[in-house]
Length: 112
Image (cartoon, rainbow, N blue to C red; front, top):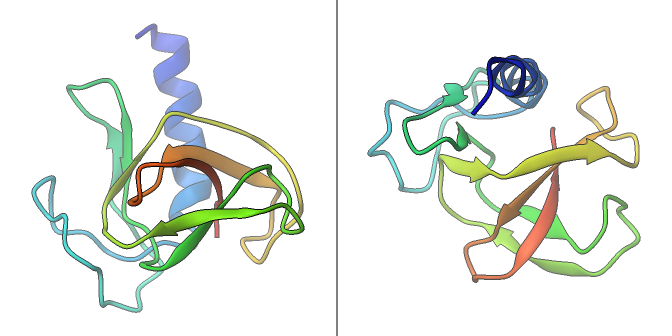
C-alpha cells in the first residue's frame, strides 16, 4: 500500500472513529458493549483498515439510508475495504465505508 493510501485511510479512520466503540486489540472480534465513541483504527499488516464499530450497525446496498439493508455488523472490530461519500449522517459527515458484513454480503456502513 502506498504512503498516500495509508495517509488517506488514516484520515478516514479518524472520521470513522468519531462514532465507534472502544476495541482492546486485534483479537477482539466479539460484540462491543462499551459506550465510548473512541476507537482503535488503523491499517494493519494485512493492508486493511480495522476499526471498532457499533455492534448492530446496518450495511446498506448504496451509501444512502433509503437503499436496501444487506445485513449487520455484529462483531467489533471490523475491516473496511474503501470509503466514499453518501448521505449525511449522525457522525456529522457524509463518509461511508464498504465492508463485508457478518452475513457474508457486502455493504456500505455510515461512519457514525
